[in-house]
Image (cartoon, rainbow, N blue to C red; front, side, top):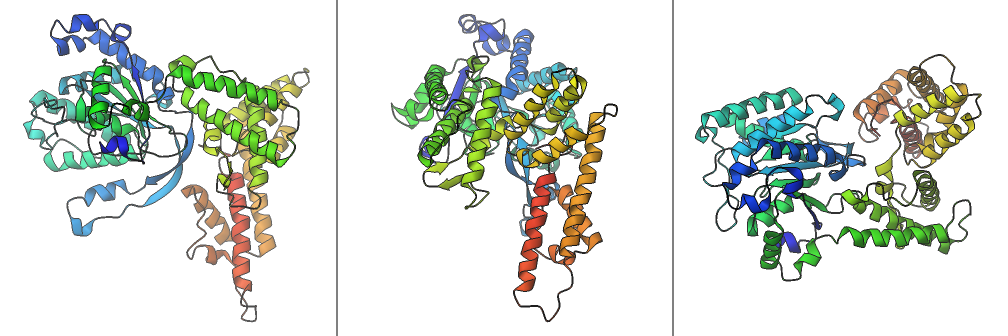
Length: 546
């Protein structure tokens, strides 16, 4: 089976969530009665959706962030779908994404409808920032799954659907239209466009969860997809196909695909792995038990604390490389353990000590990359830094401002020194904020006792940004208005355009008597300064994603 042998895929981790825990129907009872009717019991569905909402952030790693290339012209691509000669090329832009996304596979259209209603109901009282963006898609299929374990392809003709099923889907698509400003419906052409739009937004990480029957379970790849919630019977080829949607390689944060099954598919999983791989395939494509990883984590942490106690300098290149390798192993183990329910509250290193070790790790990263490519995490053959894993626990500006407010309230009460130390520690442990430490500390020193902290912060950042940009303009004799517009566009787009003609429009006129290399050197010097400026002030807005 290609899904097992492919070197471009990751292993699975499977959670079997016992139906006794999530509902009112026990497995032994289910086998003796109308199975699917019993499994659609409202109380059971309520508990499953409740579990999914409570564990969604954990399973999809919402606390982690990473660079991801988004397709920015989704609407244009969808419109061009029918005319091959007018096919629109994808325009991509790199942005920071938070966590991964998921598919929820159901046994029937009726089940999909009921699950969608449950998600709508249970999220109604959540604040908008806590609600998942949930989509729904299904169409007519002759069978839920063939006897051979093949997932049947669903027809793209909505006319074949039962009237009530189509009406429900029409309403769900209206919800989708409100989320993304689209205008799809269940008419033949627009439904296919809806499918294409939904698939692109899944790949873009713009939607959190899509409820399906069979769609997207075969032949669909989205590297941002890491979790499959399953409440349907799967076996053989269909099981492997469905599970394989989750394990496409993306980055060092995504180390495996998550399967959360609300039915006991352990026997079916083992049979499928043996049939399409070999009798030892389980050890290749399934993660080890929680206890194995936790035992290794314990040993590594004890080694870290014993060999590299905080407060003692790590002397010598060999010791530094050993620390880098050891802490990198701990980061990878924490990354795996964090999605196990059993790990909650079992962390051995305190958050404070974790920050201090991350700070040491980042200091060494800065030191080792001085003479290399600053964008690479692999410095040389024997030194690799897990910076993406460090960024999982990234500190944002909102958290820092909360500490600043606390510092201001405690100023003069004897506790402000500890809070000030906490601010410095948090900034030092942040890959994106540590090079802005002087700005943050200057702000803390100058903050008033009366005005709102967030308001003062915005004014402070705006003033500093203007001052430092004007210094660059003055030093390099740049065109003021053009440079200000150039930088404004960079912050709007999230990237600094250093290629093309835009950068040349801000440079001063070049004398014909200037040496041939003078213009190129000038341009590169300006690019270097503006790049440093852009990185320095990116991510400093309150609520702005890091």
